[in-house]
Length: 214
Image (cartoon, rainbow, N blue to C red; front, side, top):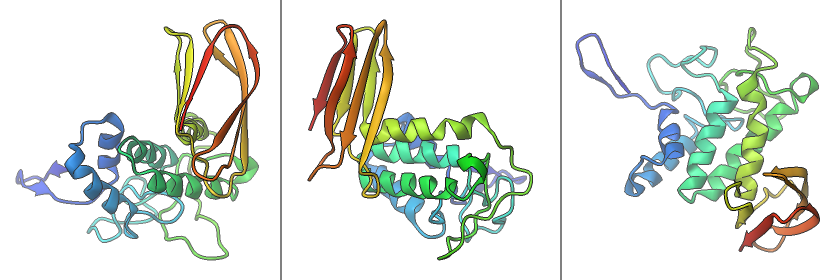
């Protein structure tokens, strides 16, 4: 991840490779290794991905960068995993974040929370001075919903594509209203189905095209 004072590699496990997946720069042959490490117990707390693996020398679950969980960091990793076809891993991380936010005031996602492992009957441990609200944490829900729906808007072609949308088991249905593309608007409803989710167009204002791939 870095070089130390003697210019020797710091070979530590962190969440950074999840960002590499998100950008698409990881060789597909290495993607499974990244998936396996991010989802391992020393990285995934059950609420989200730690910034640093629990077995690292500098690991501290209450450290700002060396073991805490940043929701936007986890969401970026989740979207990266989805990009490489690891849909179950994506849904696992998305589920952890959606469950975590239920334990915070006003269901407001904080800047970060502590990286202690998930314990039955308890919520995530709050980071004492985390910013809340925090813009990039507030954006997590939109990023994850976009991932669930595999939604790609294309203003140039006046098109919205949903490519094999899939909802997590706990989410029976989801509605998007007033989704705008150029000067057009659509409302749609996505529901659980036997395999991928089913999509219903509720309303359309304009000639925007909607494509659903299964």
